[in-house]
Amino acid sequence: MSTVDDLLTQALALPEQQRAAMATQLLHSLEPEDPDAEDAWAEEIISRSDAVHRGDYTARDWREALDDIRKQLPRRQSK
Image 1 (cartoon, rainbow, N blue to C red):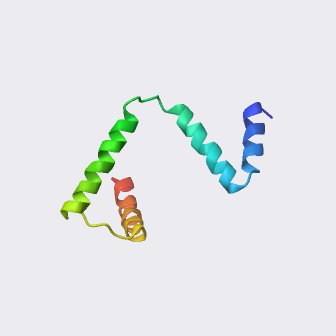
Image 2: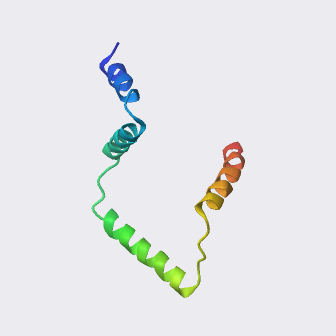
């Protein structure tokens, strides 16, 4: 068995929360560093907050949004 297979076996034996943390760290290790990302997210948050305060955006329950996304996925995948 290879080192990668051994590590995967050990990782899969971890509790869910620890596996999620490890997966997050692994994914982040694959992303290039973007020094402007934090500033860009801050601007996006301010923009969205402003839109809510102006009445240009109405929030809805996340479960509804997730249901809509799931309904659209099969159509997008078949295209």
